[in-house]
Image 1: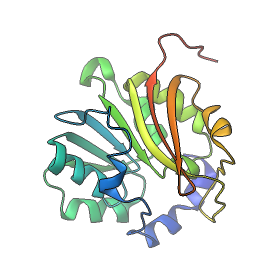
Image 2: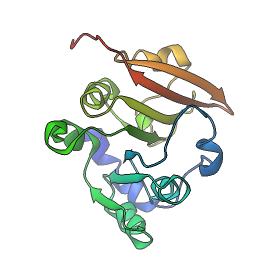
Image 3: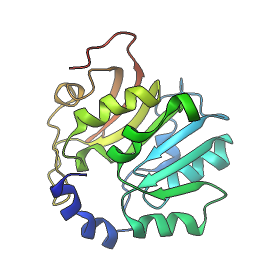
Image 4: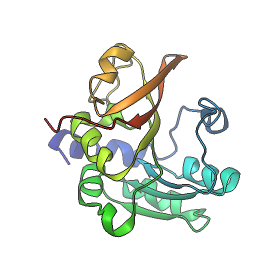
Length: 187
């Protein structure tokens, strides 16, 4: 985790319940995604509402991580048997062993990327643990806890060169779904 991200941890711990995306509508954005019975990493899971919805609505097998102890505590209250762990996304994704534990069918990231100092680093790590990503990020919305501000979808895509992304812009949010490209440069 980077210094600026650590400095923002107090903010995340105070704002445990914040999420601006409607959970049910979020999962309807890309009807081609099959969530049923899938192994899904909820990266930046916050209070767990997205992973819990996946478990109930799709009988998925979600696994949640967040770097805020307070948010993880809240997620564990109604965990529905979902495993939640307090760890930063870089440490988790870079130490995950897909050859031992298997790849995730999908990595879910709702309002996470704008809080990261190095989205390119995360994109590369994700390409090793999953073949699909799905998430959201605010468009052109500077905020005290945002380390990245994406002005348009072209700027957003440059951080995810390993992925073929489909992007929808709705209500000043970028929603994305991507599959891993077959060949990519490790640069």
